[in-house]
Structures are given as C-alpha cells and as structure tokens.
Image 1: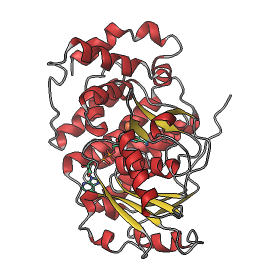
Image 2: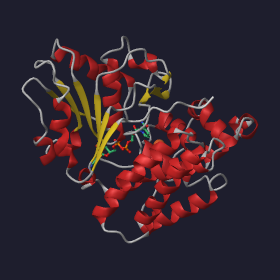
Image 3: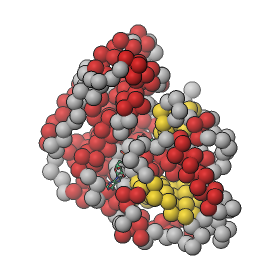
Image 4: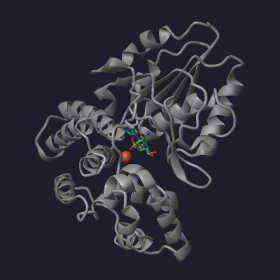
Length: 357
Ligand SMILES: NC(=O)c1ccc[n+]([C@@H]2O[C@H](COP(=O)([O-])OP(=O)(O)OC[C@H]3O[C@@H](n4cnc5c(N)ncnc54)[C@H](O)[C@@H]3O)[C@@H](O)[C@H]2O)c1
Ligand SMILES: [Fe+2]
C-alpha cells in the first residue's frame, strides 16, 4: 500500500511575504465576531513584524513560551485560554515561530474541534474532526514542521506526534527575513535537523525516488550554506527551502536512528530537538558515515561545540526509560535497519550508543 500523501495546499515564499498574511486570512473572516488567534513565540514580542500583524479588535494574540518543547498539558491550557476568550469558534489559528511554536499552533487548531486532551491523540490517525484553518510561519528553518503531518508533543507517557491528515497547515508563509537575528548556534542546530532528515531518508530502507529528490536537494543546500561562503541573506533563503524539502523527503519515507535515539534523550533529559539530534548524529558514524563526517566539518567551520557526557550521571531507571522510548518508535527503526531491526538494535546496543553521548 502506498501512502496517499497530504501536502500543505498553499504556500508563499519570499522576502517580506509575512506582510501578505492579512490578505490571506481575510477570506476566513466570514463571521465578523469570530477571532483569529495568533500564537507567537514570545521571543518575537518586540519585533516590528509582530507589531504589524493584521490583528483586528476581536482577535487574540498569545505570546507562547517555548523554553521547553511543547507538552500536551500546555496545548490543553492554550486551547482552554482560546475557548475562554470568545464564545465564537476562531476562524483561523496562526503559528509564528520555530518548530515548537508551529507545533503548538497545529495542535491547538486540532484541539479546538476535537474533545478531550491532546494526549489522547498522540499516535497515528486518531483525530476525527478537521481542525480550525491554520497557518504556519516559520522563524527558524530546519524542522520541516511547516510541511509535516505531525505535531510533536511530550505527553504523560511519551514524546509522540499527533499524526493525521488534519494536522498539516492549510497555508504556510516562508519568509526568509524572519530568520534574521536567530542565535548562531540555534540556527545551526535547527538547520542540521533538515540535514539529518535527508540523511535518514537517503540511507533508510523506505527510500524511493520521490523522497530522494527532495533529500538530495535539501542536503546540497545545507552543504552550500555551511561549507561554502554564501551571503547570509541568500543562505537564509536556502535554509528555508532546505527545511521544506527535508520535510517533504521524510513525508514520503521516514526518519531513522538519530531521531529515534534523540526522542529518548529528549524525553528523559529534556534536551531540545535541534541540539539533541546534533549530539546523537555526531556518534552515528557507523550508520551514516559520510554525512557524519560532513556534519563534523560543518560544525568545526562554524565553531559549534556540543556538550559531552550527557548520559554520564543517569540512573539505571532513567537509562532504561530512555531506551524504552527510543525502541518504541518502530517505524523509524524499520526504515533505518529493515524488518529485522529488533535483532540489530537490541536494548543493549541502544545503551551502548547512549553511553557514548
Ligand atoms: N512537526 C514536525 O514535523 C517537527 C519536526 C521536527 C521537529 N519538531 C519540533 O520542533 C521543535 C524544534 O523546533 P526548532 O528547532 O525550530 O526550535 P524551537 O521552536 O524549539 O525554538 C528554539 C529556540 O529558538 C528561539 N527562536 C525561534 N525563532 C527565533 C528567531 N527567529 N530569532 C531568535 N530566536 C528564535 C525560540 O524562542 C527558542 O528559544 C521541537 O519541539 C521538535 O519536537 C517538529
Ligand atoms: Fe527532526
């Protein structure tokens, strides 16, 4: 059975395109009292483009806190806040920020039309009702969250996405100007997410020509940006596209060893996705030899230093929990190591890899 891929139906790409948001959502404002909800990473609170957001009197702007990556409890809290704000159902939810903020927006858009807690929908195809029309506006490039059919959440028992055909944005705005001012390290970590997506797609068993085309282009753009000598403005444009392409490559294949181990690391230690992937990837030369070597050269060129001995002080219980979370991600291992992955990635082997980090 081939996957019937749901893609984001509308996108705008270009410098300053964020200023078209007002026109884009005008068509959604059929009920004059129904609010548009803007979920904006609070790091942007003072930015000019935020002051210029097309918010009307009945709209709600929520500055979200992504000091930690999105949790189901936070999604539920934000959903309640939106419901309490107006008796009218919002006509649009706009997420402006990195992968964390975009994921919050996707999840809130779904939870406004589906009952219960967001933790009940972590998994595959558990969402029954379409969400509110939602728009994604990335301010970091790399996660591919702008294009994916998931919103990654940490819940009471696991870190797992709400994967569904209702999850993808209805519209995205890829404005490279919004990447300006991102901290150098964060920019690198998040960009490497797309490099790693492509690597895991290309070297996985699910690879196909569709996925390969996106992955190869995504990786070559990352290499040009981080190994070449490219003007920063052009580099931002390239990273924005590399992120989208990296997301498209895994949409029709899957991620692999790095993401599976990173989920465990992040669940137990709260390590963020971008840096977590970098830490794990740097130890995976056996699985992704050439790409890990390239990655190390990019790191060196940009003076990136990763923390060492992260797992050194872990208790036995924490280590087992980390291994449990990582090994529960069956499709990732199947892609990475094939149908007999359990023989190749035993809990002992996972422990051995974690102990290097
Ligand atoms: N849905 C998906 O398909 C998908 C895929 C990969 C990762 N993710 C999720 O994405 C998240 C990681 O996203 P991310 O790497 O984009 O980072 P992020 O959204 O977690 O943000 C990282 C930090 O950068 C700050 N930041 C964001 N944009 C900025 C800017 N322009 N200038 C200055 N600071 C800025 C944020 O405030 C935060 O402190 C994780 O929660 C991960 O689980 C989702
Ligand atoms: Fe990722």
